[in-house]
Image (cartoon, rainbow, N blue to C red; front, top):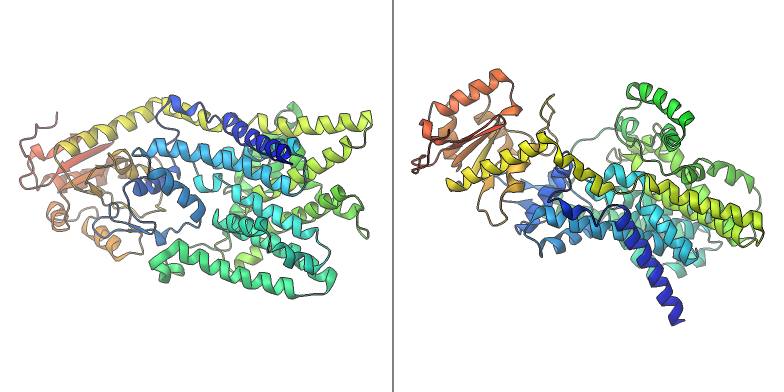
Length: 582
């Protein structure tokens, strides 16, 4: 028994370590930064605030002088937030802490896939292969360093495994016995604390499985109990995410609409990308890429797993129909049918214009990004595929064992082309424009520290977190000064206010283009420096803003100036014996 446990731990370590290696986790130390652009700035800012001992729910370092309130952009990943807090307590560099987060996260995805597949009675070597396929996926490749918390989708494995296990039940008593077991308690906690989308999709899938059990048995107690548990979980999620700002639950979050389900729902046609290894497939993908921008906007593209897993998902209705009217006697086929039924529901629910749109319309539009159901579908497809491999292998016939080997190789090959996600991201850091951007920020910070500036007004005044884009400026660089500033810096930054905060309206009105006495107003609000992000303005507005600032300052107060940004010291006196900018 002890040797079996040790062997199980060994295969779990194989799944975790191989996932990290295949995603480039050992190569990312060659450069200081993995990635900087896009929504990744949100994650970096959260990590930096934790390093600086700011709270889960608010920050006094950003959004100065009014303070950033995170309830205006709430996160529902307490498990991952605890992980970032633990990492932040041992690190003073946000970029190093991010690397550690991803290494632990990828290992967690591989290990969670292995644990859940073992719970569903997949043999250890195949479960390890399944864990690797779960972690090294197109979904991770798309989400990593963009939607960072979504990229660490280990909670989805537990939601999918719980749903499949409950779908396999024949009696209501089995459910009530199951909820007292450690795997259910730990699984439901992990499933509901690893992210809003994964929590909701897990609860929906478990609810579907329980509804099927209710229909089969005619007993409602399990379903009623689960609905009450869901209400408790949702309340706890809101309390943890919003903390003392719970009253902002309805008004604080970014506004969503049901129509966004058409933009961010699951696109079944994107399964075509699994054929990009074949010239015939690439020909049709080329045609699809021409029409898709017109008909399919939004996110969720290029996320379908390899061709074996995608076929498993798409063929799920056929599998269910093949066994209609009878229950398979073989345990593996029963599991395949139950997983296929849940995958069918996932397709019906999450596809653009599917049942998920009705959910958005009638219940809540917050669940807009329904393509994010993919990790649950992927775990179910891996389980179904591995069950089929086991069935073929144990038939002990040369042909069937050959099919099993081919399926296993196909499963691994589906992950091979998306390996080294993290290390490949770092190639972007070698771009000359990126190097110039980082150099500009660092030189600005040197000038800021030389002037001993402790409160920086950032212009233009921009809404956090979702600002309107300009053709040549996306406003993410508004965070870069804070991100590259040293961890023990006393400097506070103005960017970080939601347009629903009164403080944002104060800054917007006070520092609009053409506003008078910009320097005086900034000093009155406690700022001792003004940072102008030049690319945030067009040429005409920039000249007006610069003129309004410089009219109230001596030339020596411009302490940094380049193509991208300019920094003004507005302290008393502003020059403080500093050399004039060249």
